Length: 438
Ligand SMILES: [Zn+2]
Image 1: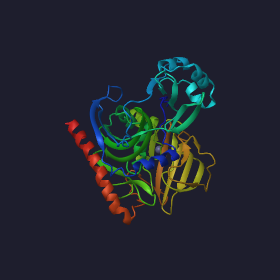
Image 2: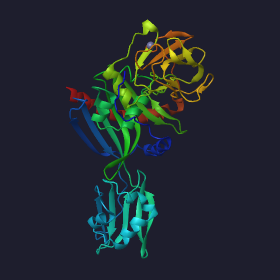
Image 3: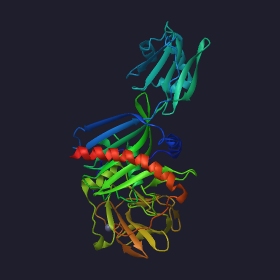
């Protein structure tokens, strides 16, 4: 089977970016939020028809404005770069006397990004009454502004931190076709969709369990520069209702720096085993619901088959050691991972194994161990997954799995007060969500 669906694989943000975001959290629950805007809209009918979308945006307070004299001695103007723009044309629209500065901008090594004249990007200029340039600002990336300033008879470039408008956004949506269909309709960034799937990955198998009518609410951080989303932060809280059962996740970081997602009563959502061995992405998200090639005939062949495009990443559901990596009759390329004294997992029909992986390799939960294929007895690309207890196949969809990593008792009170404030936001979303369904 060839399902050549083009799509963009969503990515989780790089670790260093995540670290930066942690700072945004500090004091969130104690800062009075203002500027609440509620909106309700129905997305235009694409493949995600009739998706109920509700958006609530809260703005974190901006720092108090420093008093500025009413009569400013200079002017700020801003212009958007147009397709086919030139430096000269841009400066002319900014009402800047352009002779010297145009030359400088064309030749300055540090102004290379500006020289690309990327359409849609904004350039700001501060001039004197006569139109002589004092300084010019250009957003290089989500964190940095390039500043060009007057320096005697010439100019110089300086890079400084961008002024970001940090927000906490709250959205909810109902699933009609796929998780990404719902997040697209609600205008939720892909990085948030993958975080959402990751957070609940020990509770919900996003390939097998999603149902039409499942719904979720999510509270997450974003950063804007002049109205443009430049950064997506972490999910602060989420509620996911799957098949009528609701799960809640609250982000919490204790004073020693341990962080994670917890249930309202303080249980860690991270467990020793993931529910699904398949990487969740925009492509695999729609795959199961559109092509439903999943054979849930566990009794017949003592495994679960996940239909997925060729080459989809297969992840280890838990920490362990590779016990077997090779070919077995029927299974084709198969990998067996021993997790501890009792549990092992097997992954069959693989196209290939992860590079460098061999018997005895140490594996961590979530590590990519191979790729979906159709080796052995398989009529189409799919992953054959077995969960074994003491070497005997058991149904992973029903077996009770061990939990792990509880919240330290000394942080329970602190967590409880944090949970109370963030739960109020989820309740607000849930209330409006229910109201909109009536
Ligand atoms: Zn199978």
